[in-house]
Image 1 (cartoon, rainbow, N blue to C red):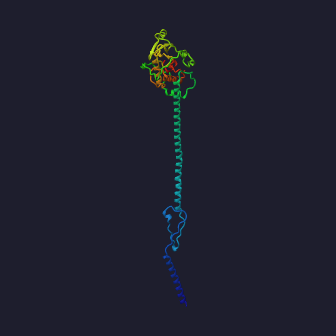
Image 2 (tube, one colour):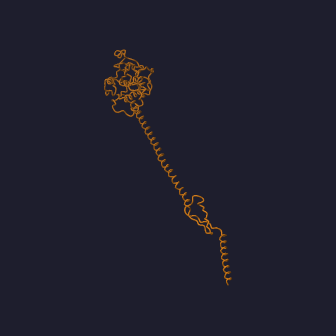
Image 3 (tube, rainbow, N blue to C red):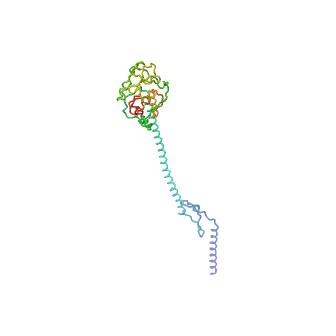
Length: 331
């Protein structure tokens, strides 16, 4: 009986051992299961993204978990670095835009100022041309200009700054034509007893000759008896000298040519054509006269004289008088 029990126990023990071995063998022969997908944040490197299952003794199912902190931190660091990089770039763009806009604004402002300056220059030029046209159309001067100088006068004086007022001018001799250019200086007609318009407003001893002037018509004998050797001929027309001025001797030659019916200051006792030529040359140097030095006191020359007189606060006689020549430095 004891032997039977012992055999039964042995058989049971062997069967249990054998069954356990068979089960272990069966488990070892089974293929390994796939690792579970990692959860949490994606890893920065390839090893972190593809983790291998951890071997477990006894054939237990490998365990998987969240991505490691080390794998997550580089990814977070990359995001932080990106933010730090973009911020300076944004600040640079932000700073650049106002600078570019400011430069464009300054350029537009400079262009606007330049346009305004060009308009002002054009305006001054137009005023100057208008003043010249007005003076050229005047037959005689008006009252003494006591008002402030206009922008035209200021522009002219600035342009002629190198010519000092009153600078001595030596008289010159000019070879003028023997025949007058009647196109530029048309002849004037005689009017018995004509006075110079506006001369009643020219006060002072230096303008007495203009206030007292009156056109007279006499024959040759009368002129010879009264002025004898004080008569000269210019462009075939006679002039007589009296009280420091040359005057047209109307009637000496009935068809004599005169471009101006009035006194001409006897500058250094030069004949009328040389006085006129010297005045033309001086005004030409100062930018007032643009015509030829021809010794004719026609409308263009008289307009230039009027411009000079206005700019220098003189009576606008539009004629060659002593105060004007003194201002020009010719006396």
